[in-house]
Image (cartoon, rainbow over all chains, first blue to last red; front, top):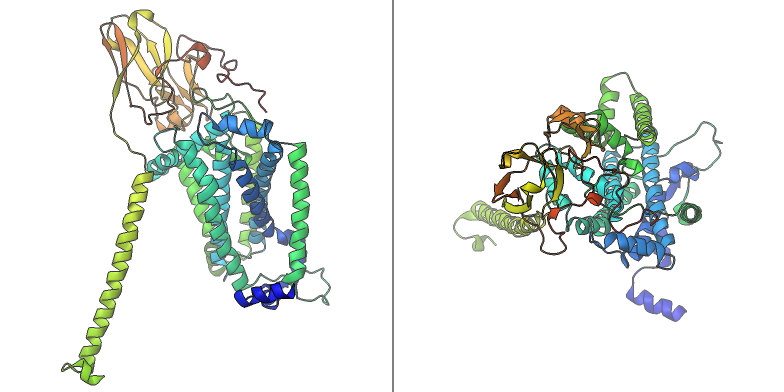
Length: 349
Length: 205
């Protein structure tokens, strides 16, 4: 064993000691509280998505004539296909929930404030990439609702002033959904967006390591507890336990509520009731409240405010006496998002 | 070193060297931007779908087969769906109106509601009158009517102007759609909920 270690050591100038030093970042004590580990949760789920996504890609065919049948075949015929597909679906759902919860936690603890503004923006990019991956992934199933969801999504893009039509044509590979659209969605879903997410995650984690995690103290905490604990092995074990709990949860969801398959896409007939995936309910409701360009421009403005929030918040704190305005704005924002999502979920049209 | 700089003296030599360094750096940057920028432009052009603007005249049906008030649904070679209704009996193309069944708001398929004498879009509650004019919902507010297609009659045959097929393979044949595909123009009141996608079952879950 030592001979192998010596042979490797001569060729790879990395020792266990050096590795421990590199990873042994002191972690603030508040990370022992589970809701502060919500950043690691989507990262873990993303790894599950890569694993299950690769397995699904072995059988999936990205063409309008074969896509639906290949998904049906994965679900019905392939050994454990239903389980892998259901894991992929539920990990996607939980990943979006975890990213949103992580963002809410960062927002309400003010962890985006100077000097962490850039990492907030990187996080916002990750949120949008995650939503885009959800959108393109759902479109690949090629069932009625996913087909019409993609059609509506592309046409929403077209209402963006100046570049909308260009973006829509790039997205659909033509003026409307056609033979080439699905392969475009597949490449975005399985290659472009995951690679972008990996790069952004790398930047996100590097900035966290360079700046250190924000430190918090809670009123009910014993003053005698240490300020930090070790990343390796303490925090790594916490993350591994979270990973195990998530795996059990995913497995249970996949088994009890497996991914279903609606009627195949029919480009000739829009279903009587059409809904996107739940995470787009708020945007869908917004589109019903305001007409075309007004809805898209206002959504663009909200997205801009979300990206620029650290700077807007700094301006408010500097120039007004409302030091905690972000908390109240955040509460209104969360209530509005939850309210419109529930509203859209409860009505037919 | 001073001898190597020549008669110009140290400052002139330094200027020259600085100029050459800056110029070579600028040339390098320009080369990289030009080279990889050109590649990016070609990649963008490759990804952006071509648009030819061509129009094909396609046969739809014999005009004698349609009575005043009848409607048919037609699908063009690149998949566009059109409701064609006969409104008069003079024997010319003006007898007919060809309206896209794709809602101009966000691309859903509109359906004919005979009881309300209107086209209705189920996605965002868009409403259109029998001539395609938007009268309610987001299309009504934005003034987006159903697009019209040009028609002509030659030797008793109705023809429509549609874009040519985008891809050679795997395209559905153009032509009139059957009742099962959901004919949804004035003159028809199909049981839309009963119409199922061809060859599929709802119980595929």
